[in-house]
Length: 200
Image (tube, rainbow, N blue to C red; front, side, top):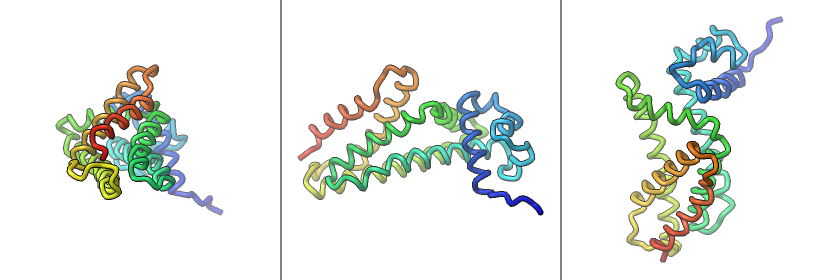
């Protein structure tokens, strides 16, 4: 009797192992053979799920970002205050990536792919979509805080959201370069300073 294969579970196993391998060795230095070995599957099995290494790398990026976004959103429902939800979102976003810092080089590889002529269109679109999604989430939280009177009504929600994302990106890059740096402490300080300026 043929063994039943859980395709979703196998795909997830491949993505988890491949993301770790890409983070460790980089896109260029990693072969499909390396990825198959890391995932404990045959090379042919990889091609059952992904057309080529670029497709697999793109899927790893999507899986990693979905994992971070889920972690960032988990605590939002526990806060009733709009300002607290906004601060929580920034903190949990940093905490989620800090907890997964070993996989952070995948993000750096995606930025690099967005700059290369052969992969620019696909990966720059992925990054634009990702940033747009986060901006929308943060803008909504800011507008909710404006509705409750916690943030001044004339504050540009989109502009603040964009600057917040840039600040969080910068903090995480600094942490990756210097593990003694504490991005969570800095993001809390930044958010408190931000509210001193935009709060009602």
